[in-house]
Image 1 (cartoon, rainbow, N blue to C red):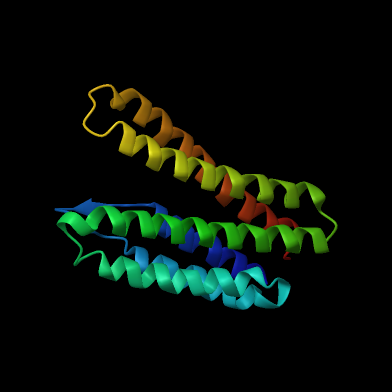
Image 2: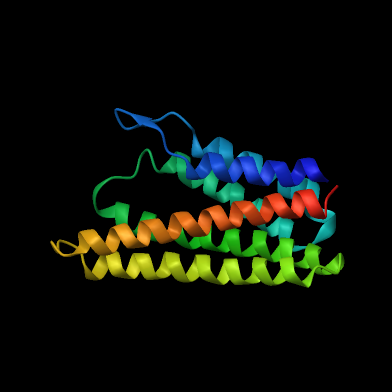
Length: 171
């Protein structure tokens, strides 16, 4: 079981990290989504939320491939749809972790998973709304930096939670 939580951790890390050379992403997000999907498959007996997250990982992998062909007027709807699917995947994933933690009488970890999924969705929606409102504004820079730092902190907190669940509950 610990290996499946490790797959969640490393797959999400691969998706989060973006190392690009000439706009070519050296760490393919699609591979990261497949790794997370593999972890969800192994964890599916623990919660019904893991199979849902797995399906959404496959959708995100397909959207990642489709993203190479999306340009112009379709970029904004594509980005919004991808964000919604991404939020749904994280919601299901952390919901599965919360259910697993509850089954092991770890209310503290379950609460953290629930809080982090709410924070993730709220941050993503808030960032997207702000991007539309501040589009073209010269004052958006400092606020964007604050939001990016906040999102990075939240992602680190999610990865840390997955690591703790692996170490404390899955071994």
